[in-house]
Structure formats: structure tokens, C-alpha cells
Length: 263
Length: 238
Image (cartoon, rainbow over all chains, first blue to last red; front, side, top):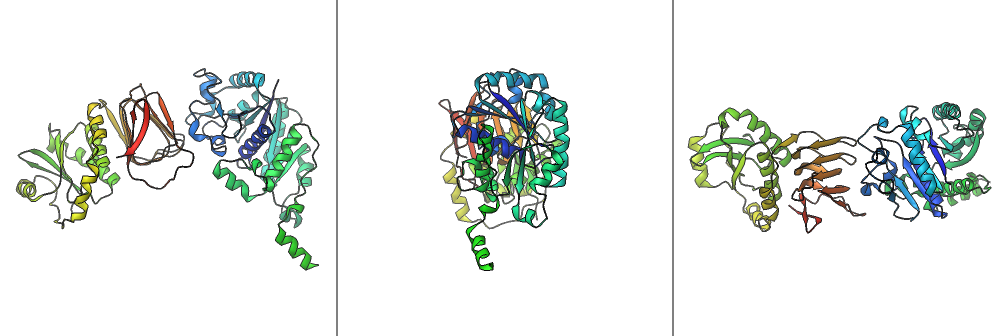
């Protein structure tokens, strides 16, 4: 029996889709059977991030309404045989699917897959309700910004109200230098406010932009720091104890050299 | 400047004079507008001879124009280049519009026609099948917008990625097509998709689906037409 994980945030633009794509791809790279479910109807992106946009024929609305079989609506990934995507519809609205239909889809997928990763839309309306309806577990993505943390807090409250207890936190786009100078909230600051378990910290990394534009998840990039951070999260999801990435350690050669001279 | 679109009558009927130096997309918009304005003058006359002036239209553009006009209830008798004989006939019998400026004819541009008249198959394909109705939409179609039409769909503008066009007839995009186009949606394999710049992620004709190659160059390749040959969607220069 598989596990349904919803990736949510409240605020938009914090990295839900990127996180869903990377966790899903990372788990598939570890040999797990994974399906990614885009519930952001009307503003779909997950297909683009995965580079599968040109393969879409059916979408989640077609599946929910029985216009196609579940199998027909699943797009196989280019890289991994055991990774699939169910895209959102682009020309419909969030209300095209209801919570009951989402629960049914999740339950059917659970029979066959190890992990069902749901990319939740921003906001707390119907789209959010649909996304969490069939979930067993929730990951909350936030940025080290007061507004994102405020929204994450609201989301955690809503998740708990819907019996999705103990959500885990992913802090995205952390810039260690800014944190050091006191210009950015630190991981500790955020954890103090939200008081939930931390799943991982992703450094701000230009490679994310590159990988997103190319449709190749950064988790497969051995060199990228964000890729390493996502690989660690994947291992934690699978139950391994992995220490947090030391973000300072990952400085470039040049800055290390500068430090030596400064001494 | 003379007007880019003018009508003249002669013994052969109505001639539409086009200034093909004007951007084709804009020209089409002007044609639609002009046909409407001149509906009283044109009366029941539906057959048009098109004089393309000193710079002939490329074959794909002729095709697009033909479908556009047919969708408006007009037939194209033929395309003619501007030449002295016809011009003189017209000068005396001009009915509406301002006289065209005389422009020197550049030989090199005329020479281009021959390159484009070699393959006529797509033109004939269109003539054999024409949807009864057609609609012309003069705007850019953006992501999330879906246009469904029972007939031929003509878009004067761009169709962006994430947008969907579905038509039982042909689809003509006089702009860039980046979104999804589904022509002949009621299983009509004779339908075609034409675009000034054809860069769709996916094309569908009837029940066939073709998707863009993974590493396609996005540079402007010129007008192209997609149609079905032997149960496969093929794309060729228009």
C-alpha cells in the first residue's frame, strides 16, 4: 500500500512544484514506483518542470469524470520507467474536480504505487481542499520570508483541522550569507514560529532556474547544491537518518581562498 | 500612402488589390474589415480576383487567404500579379478606394513565385474539403483559454503554450502557434493546421496526435502546414 504525500505552502512561488518534481524524481531514482499528481487546475506547471508538456492527452479532470481510464491519464517519464505524471487540466477550473473524486483517484493509485506526490495549488480554497483530500501525509514548503512563514502557519493549522497531523517542513531558497548577516530568517527562527518537524533545507541555487527551464529536475544534478539537498530529503522520506546539509561548507573554491587570505 | 486593400471592378468582376508589403497578418485584418465596409458595394458578388501587386504572396499565404475569404463567403477566382494590361483596365473603372501608388517592380521578388508553385497539393486539399462555417478571432489566445468551433477556425494573432484550439474544420493561425491545435476534431482527417510560425507542443488532426520533437529549434521557419498523409501527421513548408 502506497503513501499519498501532498506538497503545499499557502503562498505561491515558494517552490511547491519544484519540490514535488524533485522529490518524485528522486524517489523514482531510488527505485520506487512514483506518480506525481498536479492538482493546480488552470495553472498547471508540473508537466513543464518535468519536460513532459508535449505528451499530455488526458488530464486529472478527464480521469475524475471517467472520460479516460486512470492508466490512460498517466504520462510516463522520459527518464524513469517507474515515474508517472497525472497532469492538471489547463482550460478548466478548480471546481472541475471535487474532494470525493480526488480521494477515489488517490485510493486507486495507492494500490499500485509506493508514493503518490500531490502538487497543491497556492491558496486555501477548493484547489487546496482537493489536493489534501486523499493525502496521508503533508509537506509544507516555505521560504525564509515573513509572509511565506505566516502562510505556512495558516496552512499547518488547516492541515491539522483536516486531521493531517505532523506535517513536515521544507525551507526553500535559504541564502546562508544573508542569514549570517542577520538579513534573512534562519532555519531556527522559522522552526521556532512553526514548531513542526523539519524535513530539509534547500539553498537558493541558480541551478534550479536552469533545470526548470530545461525540464530536468535538479535532483539528478550531482554537482548542484540544491540537488544534493533534495537527494537528502528523498533519503529522509525513505526513513534514513541524514544530517542537514551544511550550507556553509558548500561555498565555492574562490570564497574559501578569499577566507584564507583574510586570515 | 495608398490603402493596402482596395476593390476595383472590371469586366471580369471584382478585383481585390493588395499591398503585400504590409505585414500579412495585418493585411488579413484589413481585408476582413474592408470586406465588411464594402459589403454594399460588393452586393451579391462573392467571386474575387486577387491582385497581389508587385510582390506576390507566398503559397502558404495564398492558401491562408483563400480559406479566410472562403470562410467569409467569398471565392477566390485566381491570384494575379500586377501587370500593365489589367492595371489599365482597372484605372478607368475604379469604383472605390484610392489609386495605388506606382512602384517599381523588382525582378528578384517576382522570381520567388516559382519556388512556391511547385507543390500544389496542400492547396488542392483545402479546396476539396471546406467547412461550411468559419469564425475569425482577432486576438491572442493565451494559456488556459480554449476555443472550440464547429467549422474552420481562423486566428489573427498568436496562440500561446497552454492554449487550446479545437475545430471540426481547419485551423489557421496567422501568427505563432505554440499551443495545442486540434483540427478535424470530429474525425476529419482532411483537415489541416496552418500557421505563420508553427511551433506547437502537440498537434492533433482527427484522432491522430503528433508531438513536438524534444529539441526543436524555435527560430522562425516561415509558414508551415500540417496535414495527414498515410495516417500520419506531416508538416511541410507552405
